[in-house]
Amino acid sequence: MRTARTAIFALTALALNFSPALAHDAGHSLEGDDDARGNTHEIRDKAGERVSWRDGNSRDPVVKLKLLGINDFHGQLSPRTVAGRPAGGAAVLAAYLKAAAGSAQDGSLIIHAGDHVGASPPNSALLQDEPAVSVLNLLANRDCAYLTARTHLMPKCNIVGTLGNHEFDEGLTELQRLIHGGNSSKGPFLEDPWRGARFPYVSANVVSAATGKPVFTPYAVRIVNGVRIGVIGAVLTETPSIVTPSGVAGVRFLDEATAINKYVKELRDQGIRAVVVTIHKGTTQSSYTGQTRPDVQNLSGAIIDVVKQLDDDVDVVISGHTHAFTNALIANGNGKPILVTQAFSASTAYDDIDIAISRITGDVVEKSAAIVTTWGDAGPGLSPDVATAQLVAAADSRVAPLVNQLIGVASSDITRAENSAGESALGNLIADAQRIVTGVQFGFMNPGGIRADLAAGEVTWGDLFTIQPFANDLVSMDLTGAQIKLLLEQQWQGQGTPRILKTSGLTYTWDASRALGDRVIQILDAHGTPLNPAGTYRVTVNSFLAGGGDNFLVLVNGVNRIVGLVDLDALVTHVKTLAQPFTANIEGRIQRIN
Image (cartoon, rainbow, N blue to C red; front, side, top):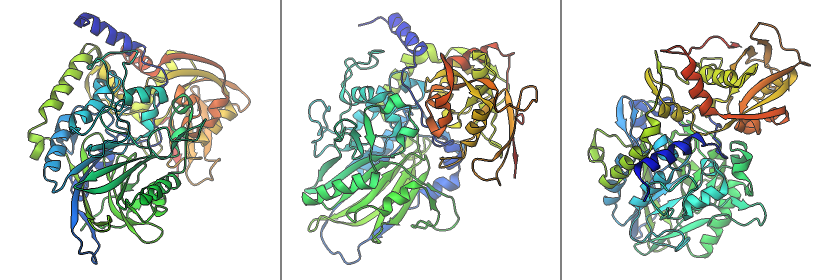
């Protein structure tokens, strides 16, 4: 056993070299931000209203099963604040899930919809997110087993997971190690040896680029009180555009609906007619007044197009990725109502889904759902799960020497909140750090890579890590003025939602009324001089952007590349050099007309 001193030294070395292959999902500028999508009591109350459907013609005897869905956990071991109240954290979430499972008539099944790991706080991320997997291992029943022992069987195991884009942050090899076991080269951490997950991961649309065969088992079959139910997994096909190329090397992502339907048919051939899909792709259900409407009038998002293509035997879709809530009945192309759910993110809620399965036909004849917020000051949250709390305490202790290092003092809150032009104070701080530390003319930072706000007061290494947890290298390169213009135009081109880059060293003006490809009107350098389209400029971006991430494809053509510091190290260095206490503001670097 290593001494505590040796362990602390190894952890510090780990963090200082925390760079290989990590990439982030910048596909949603608000991903990871429940403040914008669920941090009011009104939204949480609406999410908690139950949506129901029943086959009025069925009089069959049934088995009643409770599905407990979670999504986008992102290694959130510690509690958060929602609407001014404590919510979530692994121990509180575990208490809620255990209480809900205990109320199930015939059995329960925990299903996660991806991004269980990645973009995590330090107490999970610095330990290669093994604690996040351990949280579910603690919830696993005696019928679950480590995957090295029995890969996809375990018909009575109470947990099934799928892949999100963040599962690919460090590439397939690390993903397989995390799931199947084996010590990280940076470990061991809390468990030695690391044995992996005690539950299966399923994914129908991630296949080997070499063989075309699924990389993971496409589905799992569970038996509850004599009735069988199938669980099929999938991840958004756009994953390669929001993960660095090294993260998805060797795999391909097939059309979600096509892949899911293929395995629905295979399940049907086995006589299984109750099917649940867990998919890392979602929508945003807007707030409204009055009684919950179980329809699609207030929904938007790519998941709807997938649902409309699904086979009639799909009954429930547990979704993720957008960090919002969804609780609605969405009709597929044949008019079959499919229950679609999503429970915000980061352990602050879960899907409480009840289904009744006919013992005669095997069909789901009744289904309902509510999105339950895991308040820490009420209900099961008043008694956090003891074993999980001990796990979190051990993780906290393991990373404390590094995480608690004081870096500076912020005189006021510095947030990701964007003005109407797309500029943010925290984005300015980060872009400045990357430009100044690398000594270039311009810096650009993608909004999805900024994962948390910076509160006023003492700023620790852990605070800055939480803001920039991906350990992307900084890449300096030469671009022409024309290429910089194209880069800024790509903020709206090929994007599901605009991704406004945060800038340093230049200012620009854009017009929302102009056509795509012609929205940027003027670009000025730090001296107020317009950029010369034929001129050459030195810029710095993170390695995710440098590889064309978020469809900023022009950056792939940058020349004279030099790979420098990890982005977090640049931010730490920059903050240390600022006059203390420091702050950052929206300065008018980005101007919008119309």
